[in-house]
Image (tube, rainbow, N blue to C red; front, side, top):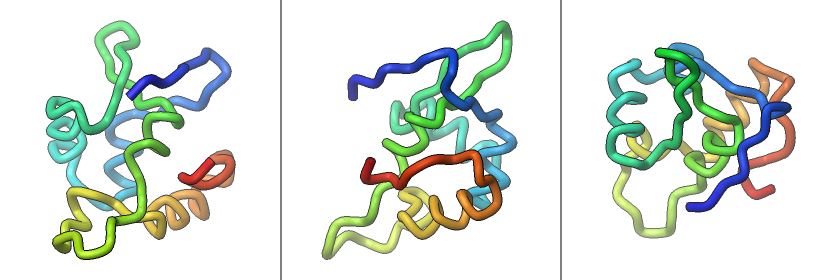
Amino acid sequence: MNMVMTVEEQYYTVQEIAKRLRVTRQAIYNWIDEGRLQAVKVGRSLRIPESALRAFIQPAEPGARDEREANPSEDAYRAMKAQSPDLEGTPDD
């Protein structure tokens, strides 16, 4: 996955993403460790760029097992966007 991350982009803490997706912080760290969710290091802290979050949150493929906790759907992104209006666009953008 090749993403362009900019300084102007919105960055989120692990705790912010965990709260919005209603998963544990450990789940977020696991996804980062597995390479499923990209993060950048800012000093000693991890931050998740909005572009990485969008790439991670995709609609499930037809016939996929029910792994909503492991693969948040577009509905999760929309719910998160409703809580944080500064998110722009949709995961399809």
